[in-house]
Image (cartoon, rainbow, N blue to C red):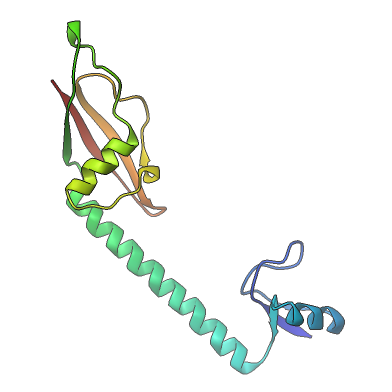
Length: 145
């Protein structure tokens, strides 16, 4: 009997995969709501769901690209306290960068901000932002006295 998997089943199949299984196992999968029987109607529903997911993903990528265009190579300035010989007290974290972007009207999670090294010296530092696996860009973080 052919079934369409609704969820990943370990060592068996991935979600949305169509696979032929034994009748008894198919009844088990269907009763546990892990799969549905393969019919013309269920294939139509599956194709529509896949198309909806793809459309949603494209909309997310488009939205991320808009944010990328408006923020790419922009400078975010932090005024920091310094000691003798212009040594900065502490360092700038992803949380602080996220909060500063929030003030500018961009809601970017701190987990999407990638610091290659600590930001603890005066000057300009490149910071990577991964909004989506297909949308990555850099911004400049500037530390001033």
